[in-house]
Length: 105
Image (cartoon, rainbow, N blue to C red; front, side, top):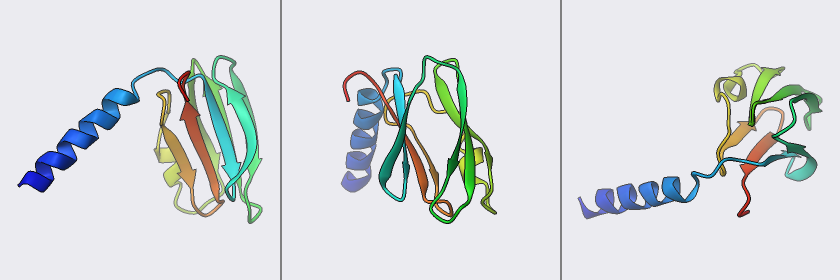
């Protein structure tokens, strides 16, 4: 029971520490920084993943989402919009990841 209470405490602390709006998103392929996107500017970019697969990222109104992906499962598309510091979008088949960052990071 105390382990559950500890997990809830740290989960709540993590959420509180990551409540600030995001300013930019770092896009990585195979762990290497590929691009940094300003979330205050509406834009679309297509990222080519490690195996040649693609992800189309859309930035609108301070949030980023994966609109389209060539991967079979489309989990990255279903992750939805990310607009808070610490938010992530990950596409394992294409080895692409997006990490959203705020002012303190």
